Image 1 (tube, helix red, strand yellow):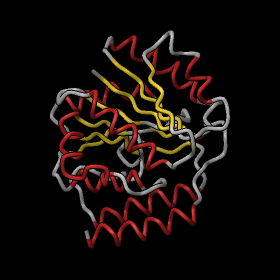
Image 2 (cartoon, helix red, strand yellow):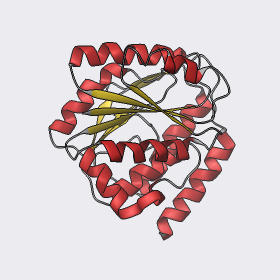
Image 3 (cartoon, helix red, strand yellow):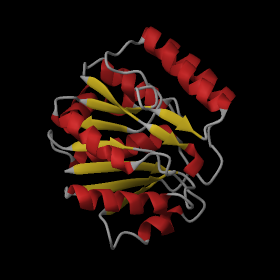
Image 4 (cartoon, one colour):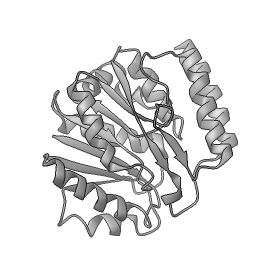
Length: 243
């Protein structure tokens, strides 16, 4: 089975479009799947958009009630995926704002079947690029990935910050056996780097497929606070070095 994790906070204008795209892709792949939407305290119509599609596709809503941050949303989704997934099943996590192309899931699944434990949809793999991303966000993502590779080198990984990834079920289980709920301790966007670095210590086989990040398709403004995120990367590096 394929599990698709979408952490969502105020994504009313984009999540419905993304779910429709996922349904088309999954119909073509003819795979048993379930979408896990973690509603992280959305105050708009995000839940309504998801509920409108539950009759047409297998979607489960995990509701926080209040906003707890991306890190807690990821932990909630990963925990539920661990409950549902067998060792040979796959979890794919992606952003709920329609910037990640669901068509890429086929290539990611192929890499898992070929022996990878984690597959990253990477902007820095040949053929990858960023469309519509601000210079500040692009600089932050590229700089953070470069710095994290220096401190925490993981063979096969270049894009440490992108949340579009595939995880083998057995890898997810090993991660929880080692870390428990400490698998995700960061609250904000830095949680994606944290997860990858902790998985890299298991160890795991990591590979990448090229991602064209379509930020121009996102309806609303970015939720990332650049200066705050830079500070959190510094804190994360210090914490993981001493861990």
